[in-house]
Amino acid sequence: TLPKVYVTRKVPPDGLDILRKSGQVQFEMWDSDEPVPRVELLKKVKGCDGILCVLTEKIDAQLLEAAGPNLKVVSTMSVGFDHLSLDELKKSVTILACVFSRGIRVGYTPDVLTDCVAELTVALLLATSRRLIEATHEAGEHGELYGYVVMNLQTAQLASWDLGGLVRNGMRLKPFKVKKFIYTDVAPRPELANMIEAEYVSFDELAKQSDFLAVCCALTPETHGICNWNLFSKMKKNAIFINTSRGGVVNQEDLYEALSTGLIAGAGLDVTTPEPLPTHHPLFTLKNCVILPHIASASYTTRNAMSALAANNLLAGLRGEPMPKELKL
Ligand code: GLV
Ligand code: GLV
Image (cartoon, rainbow, N blue to C red; front, side, top):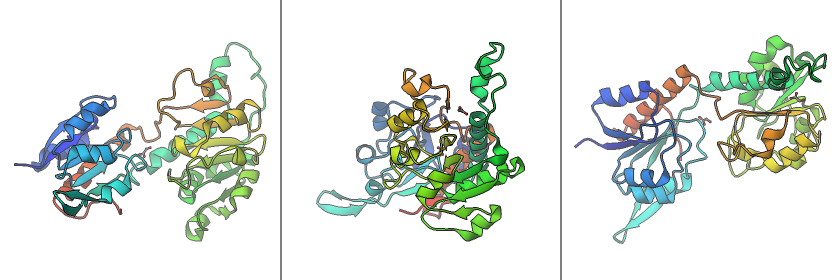
């Protein structure tokens, strides 16, 4: 019989076509745009050889336990992998007094979404700096925005957390004549930085010098909550904070304080904790905060490319071949 696969979301058609046409797997899918309920997921993965998931599914000890020893491949349709317990995936387990390495392989989808995410980062930057959302609400009401001077990108210093992110965003922002690009990262990366003449600075300098600070790093134990009061209190009063990575890198109480007291000028967030953010959340009461429901990679083309890559990763993994994009555990 063919390997059994569970697909945890109604993913875009390209990926499903690849699975179907391969003739290599039998798969079942949670046929909905809403996340699969946890109880249902735990039932469905039982006995599966492969799982194709999205970032709303926690792949942890409980789930691996529920899936059982057949599971060989987890393929996530995302570039981020903070929803996967990597330690659990590579852990050894004892079955009938024998120790086995789970040896589960993991595929993910970097690169194919890069342009799309960078585009949204720039969109957030423009929406916040020119106060587009606020202005839409005020149009026709002749409120305080009429004649108000908003931030001029041509005098701005754009900073980024992660140089990869800075280069992607920086390339797109060059036509806006941004004055200077600065970045921090675990170490300087001159080859990339030279592409947009970006200068490497310390974390403190990044905070102090930026007019726009865009966070593009992965969520890891090291970056968890790293955007907190310590950061916001060092930033300029006219600075705008943009986050298209993961909500978990931000201490949201501190961000709310910083925005509501005018410590910083604005924020553009594609990601929050939790997602979706409850409608009564205080951040929604702020005029200087633009909040999106995690849509950075949500273009038709990009999501299709992600689903195709996730399907190809899954099939290669099940055949025991190298995956097009495999996460090294
Ligand atoms: C989106 O956030 C992703 O990780 O793909
Ligand atoms: C803050 O005032 C903003 O630009 O959104």
